[in-house]
Length: 564
Image 1 (cartoon, rainbow, N blue to C red):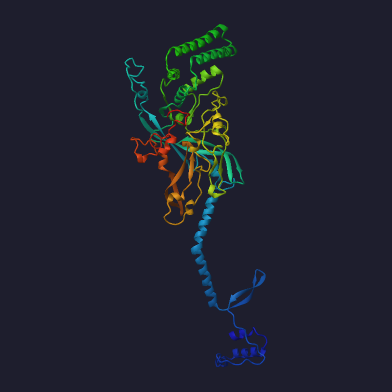
Image 2: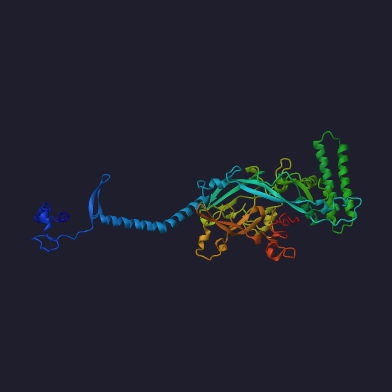
């Protein structure tokens, strides 16, 4: 039958086909034929073509007629099937893992990108509310001075005690209080994209809520803590440097100016006062100025007159009295407060003498914005970061509030503030192209001695890093720090920029993750004297006034020269 099937491919000799057909019908005759014997082909017969392993077969695929190749023998079909399966498994063994890894990397990179409002991570980047399933925890520790009276000799036996003879003062004793725990939330608004989606600009409103469940036992944000007063130290600094003129002539000028302003104010606002009473009170202001000016002229202070003036101001601004310390709720000390006694006194004197506005608000270490309008008004300008469209730049700053290097508004325009409505005075928006001199003219100063100490541009905003960076260094023996070069962050809360170092590697759902941390040497004291072991100090940190224990923030330069 196989021979007959093969004969069908040759239509030239029908007689030969008939012969094989008769053989098929006579099994006995068919069995007696020796197929191995070579028998000449009949005359006029073409030789048969060699038999192939495959043949074409016409099939009907959903109404479409076509031909497909098939194997003649089932053993060939089975062998080919095993061959194909082997190739597939080989590809899976060596290629699937790499393909899945690449897909995973692309997915992670895409989820980190914020190049439009339609990306996976945009909503989470834009808003983090207080009730988030993944809250951002913000813990504060503060030092409480427990012997401020002994430091200032204000206790029994002090300079106001009749038995006082000598008081050398005491070294401040500090107790660390904390953690005062908060939940941090934010909203980013006024969002815009530039450079074809590679950069995003925004203004950020950060706000915080006290979290009693995580705070230290018994701690409340209303706890009263004693700390050095920034206001007192600032005024002392200004007096000592001569920034405030306290000479007799200037005091007389202030007194006369204040008296004249009182006369005008009383006549317009207090109709129940007669001219005699108004003039009597105005003269009292002038006589007070004459008395103070006379005392200043008669005492040989030899350049230390600022001490007397400072004590006079402190004695007139209770409740702290002549002390450089004050006691206030923890909330006020960290977030800022209105109605500082010394600033209120200065505001009264300056406004009365010059007519210039002056607010009593003392800024804290961080700002708890209440509204978007509040955040927009107090912001130095919009922040711009890379969106991650180019993954190697993801979440890197272009600038922070228009600043490539960090500045702080230390001298706001007092005319922009309002004591009655508790509206803080602000500096004009920072301009990227300003020089250091132009920034100072607009009230901005670097937190340390040189603005280049705190670089922002090119540093991470702490919202993310380029993923899979370590794989740029394949092979064993590569130091971990090489894998994380240039992973720099800017942390506005502590006015510093840092390179991060590798801490550990772990797996999360099959994905390797690196945990990074600030290097120890960047937080060490610059005090390499006998008081600090030399292997625990870093003289490079002198530029950040790091003379205390490791990690303690020195506010001397940051607070416009206040010695803290």
